[in-house]
Length: 441
Image (cartoon, rainbow, N blue to C red; front, side):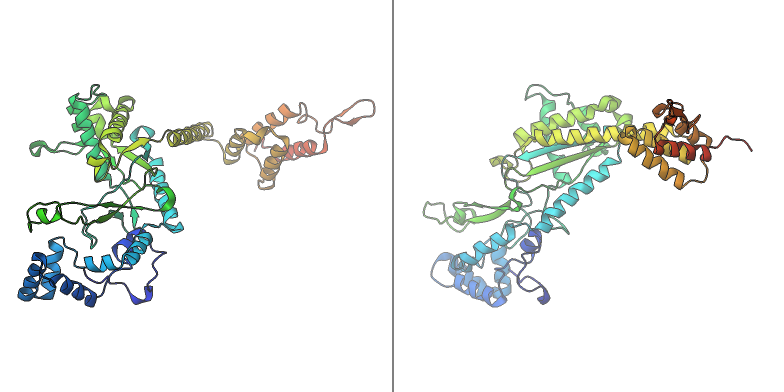
C-alpha cells in the first residue's frame, strides 16, 4: 500500500476535511515504505505454507512485486500492523466517519441547488420523492482502496451519494418486475412504457428514454457514517491455498455505510416533448409520474438501492412527513406562481405607476389604512405626475375608504363646521388632486 501523497503544509490533523478526502487520502494509519517492507518480511517468516509462498515470491521477484502481488491476491501486507495497532485503526475509522458542520451545510446546499434547478421546469415534467432508509445504505464497495472495500463519494465535495445511473437501473428493474405481473397488479407498467421512459437496450433499435435521474445526496442521520464489518470464512479455500476446513481464521473486513433513518430525496425529470411524440398517453395527466411512483414503491419494498441489497441493505420507505411538507411547499409555490401570472395579465399594458398600484391592491396589508398611506405617499414623493390610469385607481380607492373626499377634501360637518375628514386622508386627497393627470394637453 503506497504512502498517501499529502502535502506537508496540511499537517496530520484532517478533521476538517470531508469524509471522502479522509477516506481517500488522509487515513491516519497510512504507513511508510519501511513499515510496508517490515510487514512483508514478517509475512515471509515462519514455516507455514503461506509464509513459504511469500518468501519464495520475495526472493524471485523482489519487494515491489511482492507487495503488488499480495495486494492482487487480496492479502493485506499490513495485516500484522493492523492487529498490533487496533487502537490507531479504531481512531482512523472514527475520524473517517465524522461529518463536520461544513459537510452538513454542503449537503443542504447541494439539495437546495437541485431544487432550484427543478423550480424552473413545468410541474408535470418533474417527479420528486422523499424517502427514509430503513436499513444501512452502502455503495461503491468495489472501488479500489487499500482497505479492500471502497465507498462512493461525490467529488469534489467528498460526500456520500447515490449516482443517478444507479437509481435508473433499480427503477428499470422494478418496472420490469411489475410489468411481468408476477407481483399481481402491474400498476400500469408494460414493455411499451418501459421503452418509452427508460429507452431501448436492443442494439438493433437503441434509443434514449424520456426520463433522467438526478444524483441523490442523502441527509445523513447523526452527521456520521457507520462502520460495518463482515467476516468471510474459508478464505484459505477460496484463495486456493488449502482445502476447506473449520479451523481457519475469519478475517474481519470493515466498510462504510450510511446509517438507517437517513433522508433521501429522489428527483426524476421527464423530456415531455419527446414523451408526447413516442407515448402521448403517458404524457397526458402526468401518467408517467404515477408509473414512476409505483416503481419507486416496489423498489423501496423489494429491491433496495446501492450494494449488498441481497442481505437487506438499501431498503427504504416513503417519508410521508417529508412528502406532506414538500407538497405543502409546492402548493404555496403554485399559489405564488398563479398570483404572479394573474398580476402580469392584469397589469399588461399599464403604465408603471398604475401597475405598481395594482400590485399593492393584491397585497394583504393593502386593507390597512396605515399601509395604504405609506405606499401612496411614497409613490407621490417619487413621482412628478401620475398617469391617468394610476390617478383613476387611487381616486376610486380614496372614495371607497372616505366617500366624497375627492370632491371636497375640506368638507365640514355639524353646526360647528368640524372637518369631515382627518388630517392625513385630507392631505393625501389634496396631494392626489395635485398629481392627477386629466389627459389634457
